[in-house]
Length: 122
Image 1: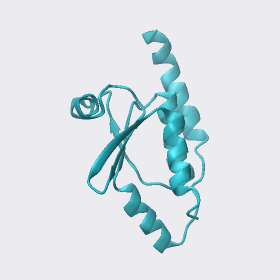
Image 2: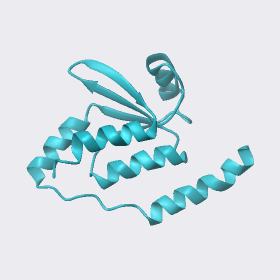
Image 3: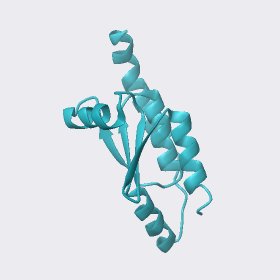
């Protein structure tokens, strides 16, 4: 299985790079408001994970600036994900709002959350 991942990972990353979606254009003031709203979001991810790529493409498509945290190669982020989120599973979106933190697993749930929260703000 490791060999398959070693072969597929560069292919997935290359395909993602050449087919990167364009972000939407917003007025500067609205984009700044969106950036403030996304400041409380962090994506725990593995760079070549297809589900993580799906979520990052959604960030790009909606012009969202969200911090990405590599839970595969950075032990600090891996430990945070396990201790605070409950399990080492990616993608995982850490959502901090009004001092409260929630953890959202599953790429479909994350994409749905992002679309509901940001897609209408054009």
